[in-house]
Image 1 (cartoon, rainbow, N blue to C red):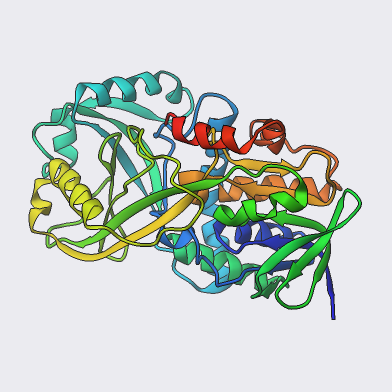
Image 2 (image 1 turned 135 degrees about the horizontal axis):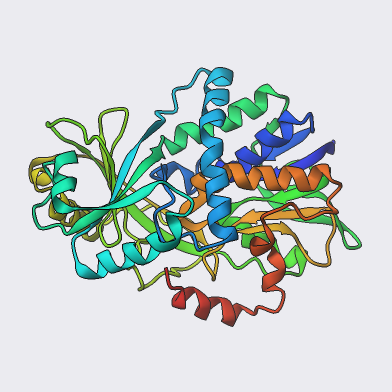
Length: 397
């Protein structure tokens, strides 16, 4: 027997579960469809580092959207922990973005010119860095010091969002969505490998699998795979008191559970090669990545030469050609919204994405919410598959 709800959300990763939760808070009847389980795609492998210092954000709407999402986390975490009883291992600490080479120093300082208009930060020299963390390499040049960044366990966040949405009445349906149902130019529901589900609005937030629906929409959903690997280490020394990142060497974070997260490959400021790596999730860990990550970590923190490898993780992020999320209505179609292509910032941008999609749906899908013009799918209206392939290869972080 076919089911009917207000909104169907396809995909139960961090983006899909955030949207379901925000909609459910407004009393909207939601069906959340997922072929596997909460966070079984990109989210489960994410670092959960929430920072405004990287090159993922550019001046203007991109950065403002990142700042909005960043500022939403304290209240969101409190809500979720109260609703579910789960500890999200959330921490807010100062962060350092290190420069070990002149090229890194130049990049960091160029970005500081506009970033410091919005975020409390300052450049500090090597001596000041070592006052904060004496164990870091003596060869570093300096760092930008940010008063506060954040980090949490991405899988726990995903699970809490899904559970909190269910607590508010969201129905989670574990089925594979096999297609979209249309009535003229309006999307009215989804076909699944079980019964069909009907709804007033369908949200496609399926990450890497979002392009499966572009034929039904007769509109491109240009999302490919950006693989990343990271490691969890057990280190005998005291935890790091700051969250550390570097343009060429990734992140280094002492988690609240005692492990040290180090990584990741793919998506760093200088990862120019092989950004577009196909269409499929790749969870296979590699020895090459492990050796690269460990060498980069030792370059920054020499004591890690004796650290114990606890776990190596791999996964693929949904990469759009311009490295900007795809959020909003599909031109020429009614009753459907896209929310995908968040690349390395899916965790960070989940609250802002959920707010925008919820506002759009509450407004009868007529008014584009503030702050998302940059992300609208309409920018890909004339894109061909060949365009997508070349754009993905040429993305400059």
